[in-house]
Image (tube, rainbow, N blue to C red; front, side, top):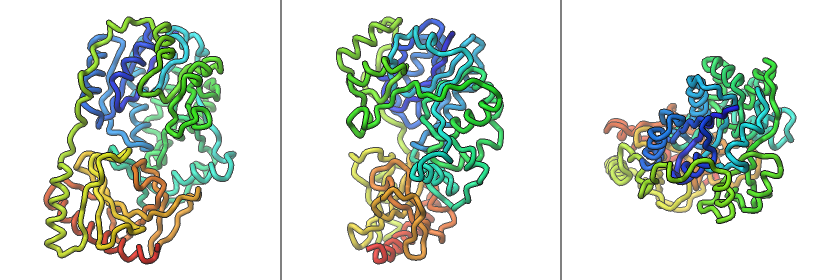
Amino acid sequence: MAVTYLILCHQSAENLAVLVRSLYTPETRFIIHVDRKAANGLHEYAASLASRFNTVTVLDSVLCSWGGFSLVEATLNGIAKALEDPSPWQHFVLLSEQHLPLVPAGEVAARLRAGTSYLVANRVANLPPGGRQDVHHRFASIYRELPGVGSFATVPRPLDPALAAELHHGSQWVVLSRAACVLIHASRDDPFWVPFRAAILTDETALQTFMATRAAAAGLPIVYRNLTLVAHPPVSGNKDLIFSDENFFAGAGQGQLFIRKRPATLSGTVTAQLDAGARLSPHRLPPLPATPGRPPAPRIATAELVRALNDRLRIARSSAVVEAMPENLAYRPFLFLRVRGPRAHQPVSVFLLSSDGIAGKLAMIWHRPFTGDFTPATLGPYTTEVVKARIHSIFYHHEVHVADDEAHGFHPLATPEDLDRLAHWTNFYDQRAAALALVAS
């Protein structure tokens, strides 16, 4: 039985090359999605693979955000593309560039039962209280995705009891039968997906809920098991989820087919194991790019935006000053600016975020330590929500909902008029932050 792999990539051409070589068989199909904000070297390498092998297809790029529905969108696009292929593939396997196989390339298809999907999908209603609250919080507001950055709450919404009853949660690394892919694709315009489009971390709930409810009701066989060994801290011994050699060699013995996340440099023993199982000579792969290249530049450069906003703030006699955050912060978007008011180190800060220099987000952040409670809090007259946008300085802090701003902080950066409005709201947010800092202290 043939397999189609969808590989989600965002960073490393070398990782992609190793994964394709390790999984290649003449019957195997590869669909590659490269995050639109990835460096041009990765885009070019994916295209070179497609030029060299007629079993490789590159999807149109989606601008992906950690935890955003954009990741589900890329997966649904991959399923649609796979179904265009008339070859008799039987399983669709979702991987990332951080995956490696634990078994030789030819054994993956042999270990998958015909017509059966493999995934983790735990009924949320049966989770412990903390886990249940975590997942329910993801649907407690209408979330809006800032392209390439993350999703932010706009207005509260009650969780539909019917949705709460059917919600399932699990790993995003799924293996789907062809019949499951047909069912998913046929439902693409179904109302089922609507609540997930306005939620966060839906790569852990959308397909899982669909499979455990719609696919199961249709009688499609499902084995509720993750075939990817994820090196969580208790397994790997590190918070970055990087697997060790011991994890790698133990994983195959546990019946799993894949492992993640891979270290930046593979050990000699892991490399030798992959080489032994590979059916493709490394000489048949296109050469790797000499340099990673550069990500696409935002429409407006950081220095230009800082200067334009500060000029406008000075004219308005505002005490706020916009400054760029340090370049070495982890998970920072391309544009990450801080509004510095007259008092430094306030417990309430204002940030401006953007990935493309077109769509922007003002976020007022209350630096309240996270205690594991996702319940909305209040600060002065405002409500706050735990932030699940994976950005240094705001992750798991609280965003203050500025009800006065009907745009919920989402402000475009495209025209001089946009920057005029943005400067107005930057000053407004800064003044409110200064007042709320006294309450939060």
